[in-house]
Image (cartoon, rainbow, N blue to C red; front, side):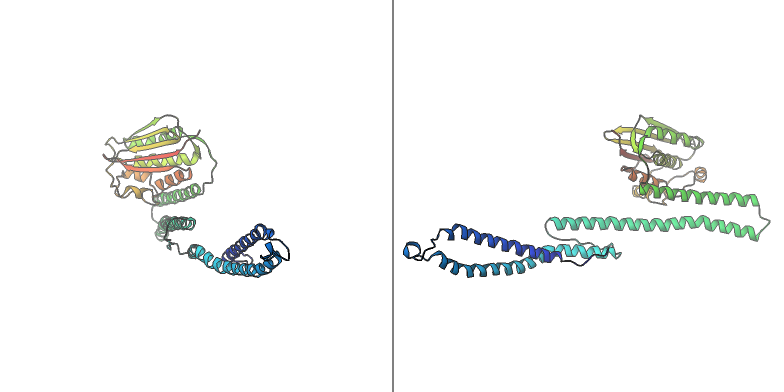
Length: 365
């Protein structure tokens, strides 16, 4: 934005200090005049014939008053300039840090020392903002790099399959079409997941009252055939739990959680379980998805919500993985949807194996 040149804040403060000091001096002189000189008689003999009269006092007092006013003005300008510079020094450091951030250097921090005041609170808030911004930018760069890699993989596979078919016309066409369809479906799923993740991050959705218990039942009904094929018991418990948000996004959130709980469970035939529970808790609406499975290392759990993390070292049935091959965005989408609905997401490993995922969303009055 182009602005016309103007006075600096330091100069404005200096003029303000000098002006206030001059006004204070003028008021002091006025008080002297009103309460002292007005009582001096204006006669040739003066007071009792020995004191000077008002005329003589005024002639004697006026030059001294003018000199005092001039001194106050100069003192106000010089002292105001130095004082304003000292007071605005922290603002200069903040401005320099802002310019560095504007040029792309987000690693710089002000770290202003001293006791707390308005400038230091601004400095701390600016440092905190830079930290969050740096983390967000780094996360976006990693996400863009991972998304590019993930999208490039199915395209490269498709090109390889087409090149093989072109060089070998006798190759089984049905097998080629089946593999191309699988690769194309994966690319479509990944694209849709990326679009959904972007939509939830932008919060461009209409809010309405949503019952999480009904959403949980719908998600469980959709994934019940998968759970039955794996021999996993899928239960939905709890009562009506109302929140405000996008029914579509919340359904996708719950579906991702339940699908993740089914796919990353005990191997088929070992009687795994998945429990989906909803309940109101004060001003919050709680959704809890708990599943059996192998014991998860504590250091692995925080990474599960990162994009394109497929839960390395977690148990996964090959048949379920083939049928519901993920793109590494399941829990990342869940976290994005929860954040877009002003909620919190908590992942905790079960001592006996498996995971407990707790979603807390604002309830409705």
